[in-house]
Structures are given as C-alpha cells and as structure tokens.
Image 1 (tube, protein in one colour):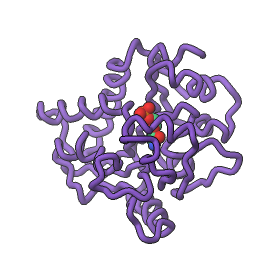
Image 2: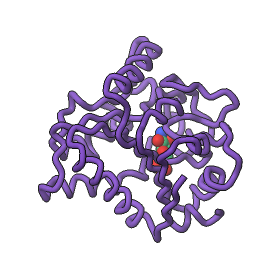
Image 3: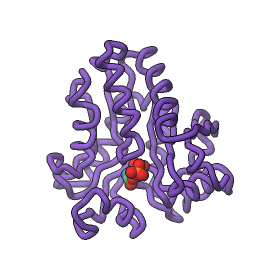
Image 4: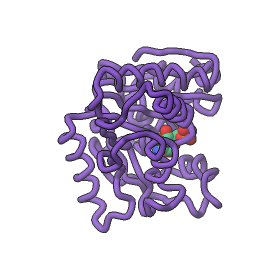
Length: 241
Ligand code: GLP
C-alpha cells in the first residue's frame, strides 16, 4: 500500500480530490465507488466546487456505493442514499439513474445484495473506490471477523460501530443493527482504491492496516494484496505508525 501523510483533514481531502479529478477527467464515463461517513465530506464538497467552476462533468459518470443501513428508507436523513444525494448527487450533473446504493428497504435483502454485486460486474468494476475506515478497521460495513463474506451481503454491526455512528442519530437505540455492504472481494474489483483517515480515533486502525500482519480482524488490512491502494491520512491518524 502506498501511504501519503498530510497535515490535516483539509489536506487529506485535497489530495483525494486531485486523484478523483484525474480519474473523472481522463475517463468521462468512469465508474466511481463511493463511501459515506464524515471522512469523505470534504472530498465531495471539493468535487461540487470543481463542478460549479466548470472543471468537472459528471453527465456520463456512474457510481456504486459501498453500503446502506438495513432496514432504513432512502428518504430517511440518516440513510446513505440521502447522504449521497445531499452531499454530492443533488449538486452535480450526474444522472441519478446511474447511481447505485444498496436498497435499505428491500423485501428480499439477499436478492438486493446479489443485484448490487451484479451491477458492479455489469459496470465492469469501479475505476476508483473511495474508502473511509472504522475505528475497528472496518471498511464499508465489513466488520472484524474470522470468516468474512467476500461479496455484497448483510452484516450485523458491532457494538463499537453502533456507538461510533450513534452521533448521527437521535439516540444509540435508533442506529440500525444491520447493513447491506459490499464485501472485501467486491471492493477489490476496483482498479484503484483510496483509503482516507483523519484524527486520533483512526490511529489504531491505520496502524493495524499498515504495520501489522494482514488479518480479517482488521478488514482494511486485507487490501494489502490489491495492486493500487493509496492510504491518505493526516498526522493524527498516522500517529501510532
Ligand atoms: C461507517 C461507514 C464506513 C465509514 C465509517 C467511518 O461505518 N459504513 O464506510 O468509513 O463509518 O465513518 P467516519 O468517516 O464518519 O469516521
């Protein structure tokens, strides 16, 4: 894995923006693999600014998202569909029909997972996948486990993830306990992967990803075998390395 250590959150967002800018301008019909959470918010704000300045065109771009809470309606302001609309899709000229977020209200979640994985294949994989990282090293919603499920699937969220994400909900009890998520092998279908991390709360996960033996107990570390992964982290996130 390549590592870029920057001063702070803004620099992390700017480095990620430059990489995304290159991908989108070199391939106008590219497929973006997108993530949610507070980490990529700065990146998305920068992409919106570049679009408004006329420097980026999303009209031929498609996107697939990593994950979605289950069950949760797309209209719910904590859903990842809502997050993507409000942080990016509503502000650029992407055709929303070409944006794919797992369906958090699917009657048949197994079929929804298969449909998401099939869509990734139909699109030919992601040209770039953006990832944040959980405090326990999770990516998407792939939690630490001895037997990770490789492709898009339903995941039970750990206590630590529910606690970490409770800040977005009215109370911890409102956080869904399950999610639909791409698996590690789905993520590996991307030709290029960037992992963003900012702040001391991510330092242990970044150390486990970069310095320790790869293990499914730290899902991000499993990306070591991918040929094009760049970790962009600030000094706080790198502080235990
Ligand atoms: C959630 C998401 C992940 C994200 C993680 C970290 O669990 N499913 O994709 O990387 O949170 O979130 P944050 O960026 O807010 O720290």
